[in-house]
Length: 125
Image (cartoon, rainbow, N blue to C red; front, side):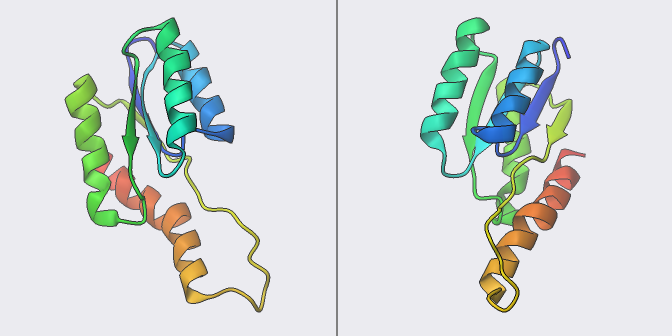
């Protein structure tokens, strides 16, 4: 991964943060996406940039806004000059008991778990 640039969605917490640490440890530079976890994203960025300065940048976006997905790719290219890999890690997850699922919950789940990865992958390609 030395010299490669990776865009990671949902990279600020949990599994995403683990992916970031692993790829960064393999010498990749990262565009770390977050939606609402600005504090966690900044802490992780500082941690990783302490090891290798200017190797991690942040980008905030709501992945449900499909029209803005190409800007994640564009900002990665502007910041690092390339994009070698995309990790579609972000997803919504919350209890959705049968009988209580609403169209809004469905749109959120399908949007973050299927729609955004498809259109972001398309923009990256």
